[in-house]
Length: 406
Image (tube, rainbow, N blue to C red; front, side, top):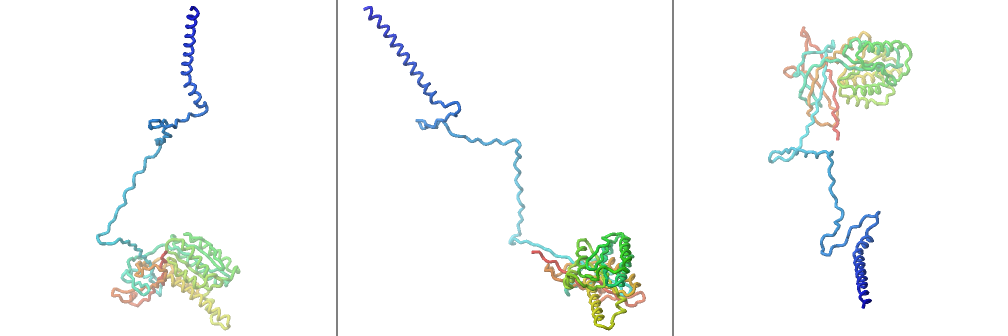
């Protein structure tokens, strides 16, 4: 009996120990399972993607994008543009647009006495009548102008003969004698090509020195006998077109053209298109031509015809642009001739009108200027002794209208 009592407590102790070990094992099982399912140190934990049993929100809602906060350096937004003004037409009027482009034509007119070449002052706007293509125009602007001149001496210097070169030098020298301190003058010579001796200057001594240098070699044979008048005149007008204001070309030459690239028709078109360039022409070799004109022989007759054609071309260039043409035979005639040129250049009447034909079609419009008295009759002039005086009107023969650009 003693043995069974001893065994029973021992058995209970063993059962209690087993029970405690089972309890300890059960308590450590969730911890081991959590450690076995935990990721390694180098991996990120994965969110639980299983939906709850109750159907509520899952444990992970995904990536949430938050708006970027604006930095303080951003400029504030620009203010809205003001509303455009609204223009309403009167009631019953449809929308219309109006564009007016009326050109103005300025014509310089010189009135000179034929006997003395003096300028006739004291004329009024009522004394002038201007016609464009035969249609009288209304004069809207009128004034007398007397201003410094901008002139180019275009002189022929070729192996045509020393007589022609001497006449050219005498005419150029006489022109420089009447220059004023405010005038701008340049000197250009030509044979086959042009040669600028003196560019535009107000120092007339430079022009005279250049003429003296040319005079020192006048007895020596020139380089070329060809005289390309048309090419030289075209190049001169092209150079002067870049200078603003009214310009003048004093062409001193025989007028014979031998090897120009331009034909007479082309240079005539260019002369007509020039708006603010006036040409004064002086023919050289007048005395020699007078002494040898009419001699027998076919070559002499052909030469005479060449000079007559040259005179006609020089006269045409001058008349179209409102200038004058001279054919001196003696050196003593030159001072009066260049004085007439200076007076005609410096003292003029300026007429301004708006043409009734406002088309910009590039056509050539013929001009005609007349002088009338207070009763509308042709103006008559007389001297202090009541003797009639003959006068001439110097103005452009016409102008070319602008070409409208499409």
